[in-house]
Image (cartoon, rainbow, N blue to C red; front, side, top):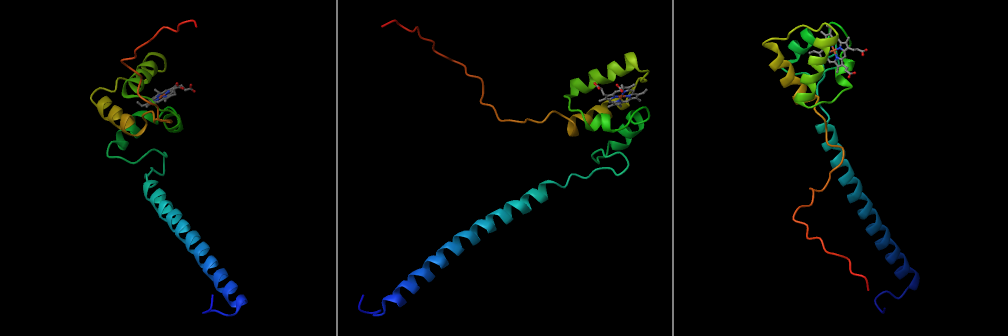
Length: 140
Ligand code: HEC
């Protein structure tokens, strides 16, 4: 090192370079975090009805009319069923709790429940194995 004669100056330059590298690394990391933060906020904009807490939807008025006169909408929000599961719940209330025949409006109610209160996948699972070739373990 003949260009930089002073050893201390050389050390100092290396230090600055190091600090520079480290801070750039951290800055780009926070930038990525910020970006994903914005994505999260953008995804979490499901609008809910103030009165009932149910997800807003063109069919919500019917669900409010048919499903919130006996009990709180919290019973709906707390549950997740398939379309068939919701249908069974309705039949169960009709058989045991004097729920009336929903008639034509049942489709609207089920459309709504299936769209917004269906079971959500909690964990990704691999597909079931098929075409397995089993083999016998031989004693050695
Ligand atoms: C005529 C009254 C009545 C109406 C209208 C009504 N329910 Fe219910 N529902 C009940 C009763 C009673 C229960 C039992 C409450 C309890 O266990 O405390 C119940 C329970 C529930 C439960 C909880 C079921 C469980 O397994 O715990 C859900 C979900 C539900 N109702 C959804 C709905 C939906 C969706 C509608 C609209 C189609 C609706 N209810 C309309 C009377 C009604």
